[in-house]
Image 1 (cartoon, helix red, strand yellow):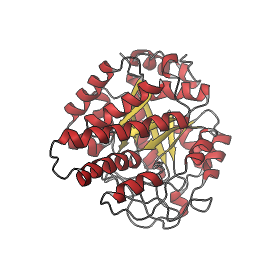
Image 2: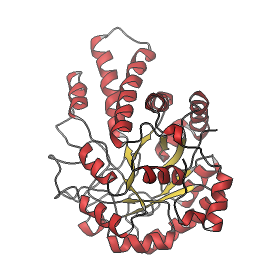
Image 3: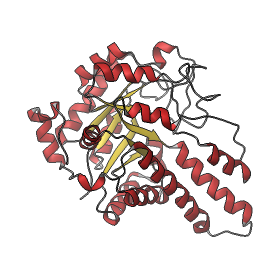
Length: 356
Protein backbone atom coordinates (compact mmCIF):
# COMPACT_ATOMS: atom_id res chain seq x y z
CA UNK A 1 0.00 0.00 0.00
CA UNK A 2 1.54 3.33 -1.06
CA UNK A 3 -1.02 5.75 0.36
CA UNK A 4 0.43 8.38 2.70
CA UNK A 5 -0.98 11.20 4.79
CA UNK A 6 -0.32 14.81 3.92
CA UNK A 7 1.26 15.39 7.32
CA UNK A 8 3.85 12.67 6.90
CA UNK A 9 4.62 13.75 3.38
CA UNK A 10 5.02 17.44 4.27
CA UNK A 11 7.14 16.58 7.29
CA UNK A 12 9.50 14.80 4.91
CA UNK A 13 9.44 17.75 2.51
CA UNK A 14 10.32 20.14 5.34
CA UNK A 15 13.10 17.88 6.57
CA UNK A 16 14.66 17.77 3.10
CA UNK A 17 13.83 21.31 1.95
CA UNK A 18 11.48 20.74 -0.97
CA UNK A 19 7.91 21.50 -1.97
CA UNK A 20 5.24 19.38 -3.61
CA UNK A 21 2.83 20.24 -6.42
CA UNK A 22 -0.72 19.13 -5.64
CA UNK A 23 -2.58 18.32 -8.85
CA UNK A 24 -6.37 18.20 -9.20
CA UNK A 25 -7.97 15.30 -11.04
CA UNK A 26 -11.32 14.53 -12.67
CA UNK A 27 -10.60 11.49 -14.83
CA UNK A 28 -8.34 8.53 -15.57
CA UNK A 29 -6.03 10.40 -17.92
CA UNK A 30 -5.16 13.04 -15.33
CA UNK A 31 -4.47 10.44 -12.65
CA UNK A 32 -2.22 8.43 -14.98
CA UNK A 33 -0.38 11.57 -16.08
CA UNK A 34 0.50 12.46 -12.48
CA UNK A 35 1.60 8.94 -11.61
CA UNK A 36 3.64 8.44 -14.76
CA UNK A 37 5.44 11.72 -14.12
CA UNK A 38 6.03 10.85 -10.46
CA UNK A 39 7.48 7.45 -11.37
CA UNK A 40 9.70 8.98 -14.05
CA UNK A 41 11.39 11.31 -11.55
CA UNK A 42 10.97 9.29 -8.32
CA UNK A 43 8.69 11.83 -6.65
CA UNK A 44 5.90 11.33 -4.11
CA UNK A 45 2.57 12.68 -5.31
CA UNK A 46 -0.48 14.55 -4.04
CA UNK A 47 -3.67 13.79 -5.93
CA UNK A 48 -6.43 16.12 -4.91
CA UNK A 49 -10.13 15.96 -5.68
CA UNK A 50 -12.57 18.86 -5.53
CA UNK A 51 -16.24 18.59 -4.71
CA UNK A 52 -16.90 19.30 -8.38
CA UNK A 53 -14.72 16.37 -9.43
CA UNK A 54 -16.44 14.05 -6.96
CA UNK A 55 -19.79 15.08 -8.44
CA UNK A 56 -18.55 14.79 -12.03
CA UNK A 57 -17.06 11.30 -11.80
CA UNK A 58 -18.79 9.97 -8.70
CA UNK A 59 -17.12 8.97 -5.45
CA UNK A 60 -16.92 5.29 -6.32
CA UNK A 61 -15.29 5.96 -9.68
CA UNK A 62 -12.75 8.44 -8.29
CA UNK A 63 -11.85 6.10 -5.44
CA UNK A 64 -11.41 3.05 -7.69
CA UNK A 65 -9.39 4.94 -10.31
CA UNK A 66 -6.92 6.13 -7.68
CA UNK A 67 -6.72 2.64 -6.16
CA UNK A 68 -5.96 1.22 -9.61
CA UNK A 69 -3.23 3.80 -10.16
CA UNK A 70 -1.67 2.95 -6.80
CA UNK A 71 -1.50 -0.71 -7.78
CA UNK A 72 0.15 0.23 -11.08
CA UNK A 73 2.77 2.44 -9.43
CA UNK A 74 3.51 0.75 -6.07
CA UNK A 75 6.76 2.62 -5.51
CA UNK A 76 5.13 6.06 -5.36
CA UNK A 77 3.78 7.33 -2.02
CA UNK A 78 0.44 9.01 -2.80
CA UNK A 79 -1.55 11.40 -0.65
CA UNK A 80 -5.25 11.51 -1.63
CA UNK A 81 -6.57 14.92 -0.61
CA UNK A 82 -9.99 16.58 -0.54
CA UNK A 83 -9.54 20.05 -2.03
CA UNK A 84 -11.62 22.93 -0.66
CA UNK A 85 -14.01 21.03 1.54
CA UNK A 86 -16.89 23.38 2.28
CA UNK A 87 -18.32 21.65 5.34
CA UNK A 88 -17.73 19.04 8.02
CA UNK A 89 -19.90 16.59 6.06
CA UNK A 90 -17.85 17.02 2.88
CA UNK A 91 -14.63 16.33 4.76
CA UNK A 92 -16.07 13.43 6.73
CA UNK A 93 -17.33 11.86 3.50
CA UNK A 94 -13.88 12.08 1.94
CA UNK A 95 -12.22 10.52 4.98
CA UNK A 96 -14.79 7.75 4.98
CA UNK A 97 -13.93 7.14 1.30
CA UNK A 98 -10.29 6.56 2.25
CA UNK A 99 -8.81 10.01 1.61
CA UNK A 100 -5.74 10.50 3.79
CA UNK A 101 -6.07 14.27 3.93
CA UNK A 102 -8.80 16.89 3.77
CA UNK A 103 -8.88 20.64 3.38
CA UNK A 104 -11.53 22.40 5.43
CA UNK A 105 -11.88 25.79 3.80
CA UNK A 106 -13.59 27.54 6.67
CA UNK A 107 -12.75 30.94 5.18
CA UNK A 108 -16.06 30.71 3.30
CA UNK A 109 -19.55 29.75 4.38
CA UNK A 110 -20.93 26.38 3.36
CA UNK A 111 -22.27 28.02 0.17
CA UNK A 112 -18.55 28.24 -0.83
CA UNK A 113 -18.90 31.86 -1.94
CA UNK A 114 -19.52 34.03 1.15
CA UNK A 115 -16.66 34.94 3.55
CA UNK A 116 -17.28 33.64 7.06
CA UNK A 117 -16.26 34.95 10.47
CA UNK A 118 -12.95 34.05 12.04
CA UNK A 119 -14.59 32.28 14.97
CA UNK A 120 -16.78 30.18 12.68
CA UNK A 121 -13.67 29.22 10.70
CA UNK A 122 -11.91 28.12 13.90
CA UNK A 123 -14.97 26.16 15.02
CA UNK A 124 -15.59 24.16 11.86
CA UNK A 125 -11.88 23.53 11.27
CA UNK A 126 -11.56 22.20 14.82
CA UNK A 127 -14.50 19.87 14.29
CA UNK A 128 -12.94 18.46 11.13
CA UNK A 129 -9.53 18.15 12.80
CA UNK A 130 -10.97 16.15 15.70
CA UNK A 131 -12.64 13.68 13.31
CA UNK A 132 -9.65 13.41 10.98
CA UNK A 133 -6.93 13.03 13.59
CA UNK A 134 -8.92 10.36 15.41
CA UNK A 135 -8.43 8.11 12.36
CA UNK A 136 -4.96 9.42 11.42
CA UNK A 137 -5.91 11.66 8.48
CA UNK A 138 -4.39 15.11 7.97
CA UNK A 139 -6.12 18.48 7.89
CA UNK A 140 -5.31 21.59 5.89
CA UNK A 141 -7.02 24.80 6.98
CA UNK A 142 -7.38 28.13 5.22
CA UNK A 143 -7.10 31.63 6.66
CA UNK A 144 -7.93 34.56 4.44
CA UNK A 145 -9.78 34.48 1.13
CA UNK A 146 -8.24 33.78 -2.28
CA UNK A 147 -8.51 36.69 -4.69
CA UNK A 148 -6.72 39.33 -6.72
CA UNK A 149 -5.26 42.29 -4.86
CA UNK A 150 -5.63 44.59 -7.88
CA UNK A 151 -9.36 44.02 -8.36
CA UNK A 152 -10.47 42.67 -4.97
CA UNK A 153 -12.19 39.77 -6.69
CA UNK A 154 -11.75 36.02 -6.88
CA UNK A 155 -12.91 33.40 -9.31
CA UNK A 156 -15.08 30.39 -8.64
CA UNK A 157 -13.49 27.09 -9.59
CA UNK A 158 -15.62 23.96 -9.42
CA UNK A 159 -18.18 26.09 -7.58
CA UNK A 160 -15.77 27.27 -4.88
CA UNK A 161 -14.56 30.86 -4.46
CA UNK A 162 -15.64 34.19 -3.01
CA UNK A 163 -17.99 36.39 -4.99
CA UNK A 164 -18.20 40.17 -4.80
CA UNK A 165 -15.43 42.63 -3.97
CA UNK A 166 -13.19 42.06 -0.95
CA UNK A 167 -10.76 44.27 0.94
CA UNK A 168 -7.09 43.60 1.53
CA UNK A 169 -7.89 42.71 5.14
CA UNK A 170 -9.75 39.67 3.74
CA UNK A 171 -7.42 38.95 0.82
CA UNK A 172 -4.22 38.84 2.89
CA UNK A 173 -3.72 36.46 5.81
CA UNK A 174 -2.89 38.31 9.03
CA UNK A 175 0.27 36.76 10.55
CA UNK A 176 -0.94 37.45 14.11
CA UNK A 177 -4.20 35.70 13.35
CA UNK A 178 -2.32 32.81 11.74
CA UNK A 179 -0.45 32.19 15.00
CA UNK A 180 -3.72 32.12 16.94
CA UNK A 181 -5.51 29.99 14.33
CA UNK A 182 -2.84 27.29 14.28
CA UNK A 183 -2.66 27.18 18.07
CA UNK A 184 -6.43 26.77 18.36
CA UNK A 185 -7.04 24.35 15.48
CA UNK A 186 -3.82 22.28 15.42
CA UNK A 187 -4.03 21.97 11.63
CA UNK A 188 -1.28 20.09 9.83
CA UNK A 189 -0.98 22.67 7.06
CA UNK A 190 -2.29 26.17 6.44
CA UNK A 191 -3.36 27.69 3.13
CA UNK A 192 -2.75 31.42 3.21
CA UNK A 193 -4.14 34.30 1.17
CA UNK A 194 -1.43 36.32 -0.55
CA UNK A 195 -2.92 37.56 -3.82
CA UNK A 196 -3.18 34.31 -5.75
CA UNK A 197 -6.53 33.18 -7.15
CA UNK A 198 -8.14 30.32 -9.01
CA UNK A 199 -8.32 30.09 -12.78
CA UNK A 200 -6.16 31.34 -15.65
CA UNK A 201 -6.68 35.07 -15.16
CA UNK A 202 -4.73 35.68 -11.96
CA UNK A 203 -2.83 38.83 -12.89
CA UNK A 204 -3.24 41.46 -15.61
CA UNK A 205 0.55 41.90 -15.82
CA UNK A 206 3.72 40.18 -14.73
CA UNK A 207 3.16 40.02 -10.96
CA UNK A 208 5.22 42.04 -8.49
CA UNK A 209 4.90 42.80 -4.78
CA UNK A 210 1.84 44.98 -5.39
CA UNK A 211 -0.23 41.99 -6.50
CA UNK A 212 1.67 38.99 -5.10
CA UNK A 213 2.41 39.38 -1.40
CA UNK A 214 5.30 37.01 -0.79
CA UNK A 215 6.02 39.10 2.30
CA UNK A 216 3.02 37.41 3.96
CA UNK A 217 4.58 33.99 3.38
CA UNK A 218 7.89 35.09 4.82
CA UNK A 219 6.39 36.71 7.92
CA UNK A 220 4.18 33.75 8.78
CA UNK A 221 7.13 31.41 8.29
CA UNK A 222 9.22 33.63 10.57
CA UNK A 223 6.64 33.35 13.32
CA UNK A 224 5.72 29.70 12.71
CA UNK A 225 8.87 28.08 11.28
CA UNK A 226 7.57 24.51 11.72
CA UNK A 227 4.21 25.14 10.04
CA UNK A 228 3.62 23.71 6.58
CA UNK A 229 2.32 26.51 4.35
CA UNK A 230 0.17 26.00 1.26
CA UNK A 231 -0.09 28.21 -1.81
CA UNK A 232 -3.43 27.89 -3.59
CA UNK A 233 -4.18 29.18 -7.07
CA UNK A 234 -0.53 28.77 -8.04
CA UNK A 235 -0.58 27.67 -11.66
CA UNK A 236 2.02 29.54 -13.68
CA UNK A 237 -0.11 29.66 -16.88
CA UNK A 238 3.01 29.29 -19.06
CA UNK A 239 3.29 31.41 -22.18
CA UNK A 240 4.09 28.42 -24.38
CA UNK A 241 0.89 26.64 -23.31
CA UNK A 242 -1.14 29.78 -23.99
CA UNK A 243 0.40 29.97 -27.46
CA UNK A 244 -0.41 26.33 -28.28
CA UNK A 245 -3.97 26.77 -27.05
CA UNK A 246 -4.49 29.88 -29.19
CA UNK A 247 -2.65 28.56 -32.25
CA UNK A 248 -5.17 25.75 -32.59
CA UNK A 249 -8.37 27.73 -32.27
CA UNK A 250 -8.41 28.85 -28.64
CA UNK A 251 -9.21 32.38 -27.54
CA UNK A 252 -7.27 33.03 -24.35
CA UNK A 253 -6.28 36.68 -23.80
CA UNK A 254 -2.74 37.31 -22.60
CA UNK A 255 -2.56 36.46 -18.92
CA UNK A 256 -0.01 35.81 -16.21
CA UNK A 257 0.18 33.21 -13.47
CA UNK A 258 2.46 32.73 -10.47
CA UNK A 259 6.12 32.72 -11.62
CA UNK A 260 8.03 29.53 -10.83
CA UNK A 261 10.81 31.53 -9.18
CA UNK A 262 8.28 33.06 -6.75
CA UNK A 263 7.02 29.59 -5.84
CA UNK A 264 10.61 28.46 -5.31
CA UNK A 265 11.13 31.48 -3.04
CA UNK A 266 8.04 30.41 -1.12
CA UNK A 267 9.45 26.89 -0.73
CA UNK A 268 12.54 28.42 0.86
CA UNK A 269 10.19 30.04 3.39
CA UNK A 270 8.02 27.14 4.49
CA UNK A 271 5.70 26.51 1.54
CA UNK A 272 5.40 22.73 1.22
CA UNK A 273 2.27 22.26 -0.92
CA UNK A 274 1.52 24.16 -4.12
CA UNK A 275 -1.89 23.73 -5.75
CA UNK A 276 -1.92 23.43 -9.55
CA UNK A 277 -4.94 22.83 -11.75
CA UNK A 278 -5.16 25.42 -14.55
CA UNK A 279 -1.74 24.49 -15.96
CA UNK A 280 -2.86 20.86 -16.32
CA UNK A 281 -6.15 21.83 -17.95
CA UNK A 282 -4.37 24.19 -20.35
CA UNK A 283 -1.79 21.58 -21.34
CA UNK A 284 -4.48 19.00 -22.06
CA UNK A 285 -6.82 21.39 -23.83
CA UNK A 286 -4.05 22.64 -26.12
CA UNK A 287 -3.11 19.09 -27.09
CA UNK A 288 -6.71 18.17 -27.85
CA UNK A 289 -7.23 21.33 -29.88
CA UNK A 290 -4.15 20.49 -31.93
CA UNK A 291 -5.59 17.09 -32.85
CA UNK A 292 -8.96 18.63 -33.72
CA UNK A 293 -7.36 21.25 -35.98
CA UNK A 294 -4.71 19.13 -37.67
CA UNK A 295 -6.74 15.93 -38.04
CA UNK A 296 -10.30 17.08 -38.70
CA UNK A 297 -11.45 13.58 -39.69
CA UNK A 298 -10.38 12.06 -36.36
CA UNK A 299 -13.18 10.87 -34.10
CA UNK A 300 -11.55 8.28 -31.83
CA UNK A 301 -11.51 9.83 -28.31
CA UNK A 302 -8.25 8.04 -27.54
CA UNK A 303 -6.51 10.00 -30.30
CA UNK A 304 -7.40 13.19 -28.44
CA UNK A 305 -6.86 11.97 -24.91
CA UNK A 306 -3.51 10.19 -25.38
CA UNK A 307 -1.59 13.33 -26.48
CA UNK A 308 -3.46 15.32 -23.83
CA UNK A 309 -2.27 12.86 -21.20
CA UNK A 310 1.29 13.10 -22.55
CA UNK A 311 1.16 16.90 -22.35
CA UNK A 312 0.02 16.80 -18.73
CA UNK A 313 2.65 14.19 -17.88
CA UNK A 314 5.35 16.54 -19.19
CA UNK A 315 3.89 19.41 -17.16
CA UNK A 316 3.73 17.37 -13.94
CA UNK A 317 7.25 16.03 -14.38
CA UNK A 318 8.57 19.57 -14.81
CA UNK A 319 6.83 20.78 -11.63
CA UNK A 320 8.16 17.83 -9.60
CA UNK A 321 11.65 18.80 -10.72
CA UNK A 322 11.20 22.55 -10.23
CA UNK A 323 9.80 22.19 -6.70
CA UNK A 324 12.54 19.76 -5.63
CA UNK A 325 10.43 16.66 -4.89
CA UNK A 326 12.08 14.57 -7.61
CA UNK A 327 14.31 11.86 -6.22
CA UNK A 328 12.57 11.54 -2.85
CA UNK A 329 9.87 8.88 -3.35
CA UNK A 330 12.16 5.95 -2.58
CA UNK A 331 13.19 7.52 0.74
CA UNK A 332 9.69 7.45 2.23
CA UNK A 333 8.03 4.55 4.02
CA UNK A 334 4.35 5.49 4.48
CA UNK A 335 3.00 5.09 7.99
CA UNK A 336 -0.44 3.56 8.48
CA UNK A 337 -3.43 5.66 9.44
CA UNK A 338 -3.55 3.71 12.70
CA UNK A 339 0.02 4.74 13.50
CA UNK A 340 -0.72 8.36 12.65
CA UNK A 341 -3.81 8.32 14.87
CA UNK A 342 -1.73 7.01 17.74
CA UNK A 343 0.89 9.68 17.25
CA UNK A 344 -1.76 12.40 17.24
CA UNK A 345 -3.24 10.97 20.42
CA UNK A 346 0.03 10.77 22.36
CA UNK A 347 1.42 14.10 21.16
CA UNK A 348 4.24 12.70 19.03
CA UNK A 349 3.09 14.82 16.10
CA UNK A 350 3.64 18.01 18.04
CA UNK A 351 7.07 17.62 16.48
CA UNK A 352 7.83 16.54 12.96
CA UNK A 353 8.03 12.81 12.38
CA UNK A 354 11.04 11.62 10.41
CA UNK A 355 9.90 9.57 7.44
CA UNK A 356 13.20 8.57 5.88
